[in-house]
Image 1 (cartoon, rainbow, N blue to C red):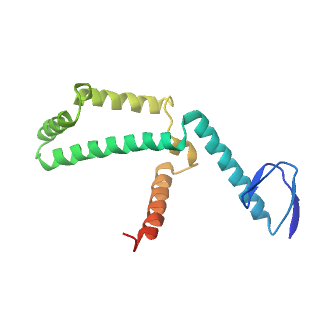
Image 2: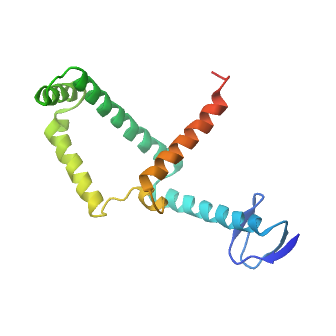
Length: 160
């Protein structure tokens, strides 16, 4: 066991400790995990204050996933019914018109996509993954998604 005075706030075994508190722990890694837990909690609180609570963020994520699902279905349907790029583009626009309002025409959606890409390039719009991971950002997101999905699926095995 070691006795240590905290250099910053920490959450250890569900308890919050302040800078300067003295603790006796089994190893220094317990302290490091405590520092990380406190930092994660503060980050989540700041996101909640500035971007929305968990349910609001889930709602926005749900909207984005629904839109992406619809756009992918339009894409797949257009591909399945086309043998040339011109036919694909026509089929895509036809499918898009079936599920959208006039403000969501192919040209309008194309303009909105181009505008979003410009905002991303200029850093006016920043997605969390681009600051969350230090390097190999896309690969890190794919790895995180795959690991979490697999862990969730393992808990569902035998329950469905």
